[in-house]
Length: 482
Image 1 (cartoon, rainbow, N blue to C red):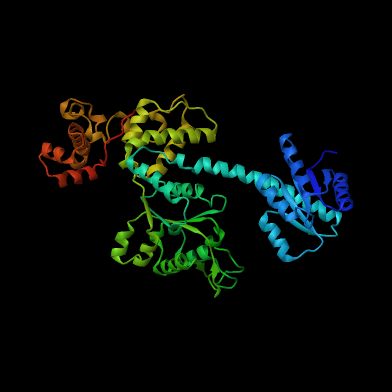
Image 2 (cartoon, rainbow, N blue to C red):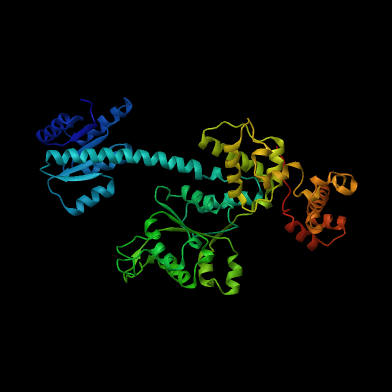
């Protein structure tokens, strides 16, 4: 019979210990009896050195020298992969709670029935397997949502990385702003993953996607009979995230009544399920995000000022992708590796025209849209590299030149003998955007990015220069390699 588990039974009553070990051996476990805690710790150490660590320790609570509870603490600290079951002849609820609090997976009272012991060992083995799976899953989550997956060299993104590092270890409420698709969810997960709460739940909810009548129940839960259709108690997202982190996206869509309830939860760390008069304490790290400027909503009277000040402790602003186009190639390569790995394909990057097309596109859907475009290209690509033909038509149009076709050189226009079928007229204001952007960039580079000197050279005032730079997505000089 193949042994199910490597087990130690620790009991100063040698007869009782040997009897339990003998039964466990009968049902297929590799079980040995030891008379005291020091012998058990020595055996645990030797087993780990041999590469065959002990799976389960079954220990009596009352032993001379080192008690079962003291042994439990030592095992949890020095051998965290080993499960511990405590046995005692004087069982109390308080002792059971304390044992579980210290890390025991089970607590049995004497006399221990054979089938009861076998069930406890099987349960301990199951918990051990689940613990290993959780460690593996957490590693996968860290791989996907760690800080290294926030890609970009733009100075504003560097600031985001710094803020994530700074706030991760605290309970501070974080408010994020940015257009849809800029990666707010990824940043929230990165904060959680790098925090001391990473082993606890991360719960995400988009307030804008849930009807106002259901949002309160979704967040705070409800009791049976609270409203029509409430056939049973429901645990809300806040309680589901207890001990961990809750991410409230699109908080700008919350109604005035919901804003007031949320303010109370943030201030008092208590909530009331719908239909209940009892308050429940909750320990949750709160991260919020808005795709609208909350300052403007406060000024307009549609967002509570007191709630805004309560949540605006640390603010992280995520720039739209069109304002950090130098990051597009980096992000595209990142998503290529991610999606090709998931699909099981080997693709050697993008060809030059595809890179030009990706860099020239305006990305109204931001980083999320780029990820989707790259995933599509990975699926459709038939060659060794992704080309323009693997990109959606609206993205691929950028592969032949600058941001808009209307910004092509004058030699390509019908009036200069170009092919009329290949040229699409654009409104003049739109057609002039890219040439103006190039002129500003060249002037800034010629003047070492000194705004005043650049404005003087262009014979415009500095305020006009700043406005044009903002409108054209020009912020800081691009970083040079090396």
